[in-house]
Every structure is written in structure tokens, then in C-alpha cells.
Image 1 (cartoon, rainbow, N blue to C red):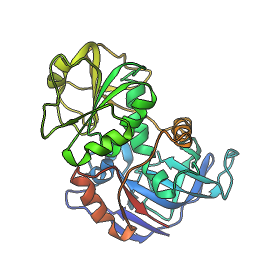
Image 2 (cartoon, helix red, strand yellow):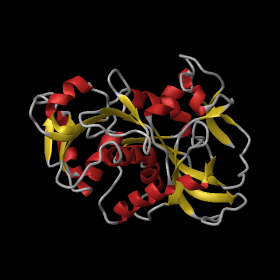
Image 3 (tube, one colour):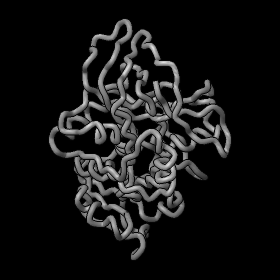
Amino acid sequence: MQAAAIDSFGPAVQLRVRDVPRPVPGPGQILLEVHASSVNPIDWKIPGGQMAARYGAAFPLILGFDASGRVAEVGHGVTAFAPGDVVFARSDVGAGGCYAEYALLNVGTVARKPAELSHAEAAALPLAALTALNGLRDPGQLQAGQRVLIIGAAGGVGSYAVQLARNLGARVTGVCGTANVALARELGAHDVIDYSREPVLVPGAGYDLIYDTIGAHSPAAARPALTSNGCYLALVPGPGIEFFLPGQTARKAGGAYFLVWSPTGADLELLAGWVRKGQLKSIIDSEFSPDDIQAAHRRSQTLRARGKIVIRVK
């Protein structure tokens, strides 16, 4: 099969499409015929080698954590899915393996694709929307009627976070550039701050949660804009930011967190429910073929993508 893979780690490492063996599903796994995948910042950070301890170093290393497609085979003990089922997933196998014609997936990270989404829209959703959901729900503990500031409201995670926070009943303020103000409102933001024209973190603003999806600020800068019980959540770890492990880390008033989470099919089903109700959608910035994977990564590295970047595999 064809897959976009790397053969080593290093600052100049680039993906290339090559022939690799088609995987065979083991117990509790499915083999997915991938129709679409999508790009996340983790995909262009892994080749540097700093995360080898977590994602492995068995070359060739196939990247890509998101997938939408059709089940090709199932391993022993799999009863929830059968060949032919149309599903989407956030892989937790190695470095993802979804930039490929076929991807091996653990069955617990898979859910049925909503018919309302194309494969491109479904592939855009898993990692980014699950990041938004887990952040708002676990360290954020966002409740109906609370106020949340979402920085990067038009980006991959931010575009989903705005919609999910609105679905949870919060008062949402989105932060974005001038060109994306209308999009932030369309996604459900009650208020929008254009960071090029007005200050973002105003002392006394009284946010219960500040969700910084691009790492633009710091806990010290955010704290005056929070309530006494509020917290700052960042997608980029840094000084003063604690790693938050659900079930292990106690949320503290005024805390600052970087969330560590694991994908589950149950959370994907929760997201799919909002999709079916018309309360959650994917914003597609651009689409690339596997042969143009390097260009897709360069687009992501600009940090100016409007929504998600999709890889059309089939």
C-alpha cells in the first residue's frame, strides 16, 4: 500500500510517499480503508524526534492521527464493527498511521461516521474536536451560564471549541483576526475580539475559563482576566503550566493547565450526536493529496489555517 512516512528523525526530515506493507489487524483492532485524513500540529512536530518516547521510533513511521473511511477487516474479538462499516477515528497506534491507504486502529478509538459529514469533514474532526471537548469538560469544567474566552477561535481546535462551548450553554467570546470575525460569529461566539484592533486580556473581564488554543499568552497575563475560581488552559506547555491528567490532577482555582487526554469512541459518539443535531460542523481550510503532504504541513506550520487541513487519500 502507499503511505506517507519518515525513515529517520531530525530537523530536516521530510515525509515521502512510499510503498509499505499493508497491516494486519490483531485482536481488538480493525483495518480501515482510509478515505481522508487531516493535519494537526503534532504531525509536523513528531519528525523532529523529541516525542519518540511517546510515539515510537520504528521506521518507516507513518504519521496522521485522524481518519475517516470504510472498515476493510476486523481482528479477533471485534463485534462492534464489520467490514463495510463507515467510520471515523482518532488513532492511538504509534504515530497515528493514517496518512496511508490502510490504517490499523484499536476498536476503542472508532465510531460510526455521521451521514451528515463527508469523509473530509469527518476526518477533520477527531483530534481537534476531542482536544476541545476534553479541555472544556475536564480541566475547564465549563458549566452553562459561565463565560469562556477562546483564543484562536477560527483555527483547528478553536473552531470546534467555540461550537462545543456554545452547546454546553456557556457565554462564548472568540478571539481571532479581522478576516475571521464573521466566521467566529457564525460558529456561535456571542462576542468576538479582533486581536489586531483591541486588547484580548482585560483585567476584571471575569472569564471562568480562558482556552488559549495557540499559546499566544501566559498564565500570568491571563490571571487578571479570570474569576477567582477560573483557570487558564493552553495547548502549548510552558512556564507555570501544569500537566492535567483526568482522574489524577485536582483542578485548582486560578490554575493553568496543559491537558493530557486519550481518545475514546464514546467521546466521538458524543461529538457525532451534536453533528446529527446540526450543532457541530467542520471548517475545511484546504485539501491536499498524499503526494502534496509536505505542502499541507507547510500550510499548517503558518498557524494561519482557517479550520482544518485535509488529506484526500481515496
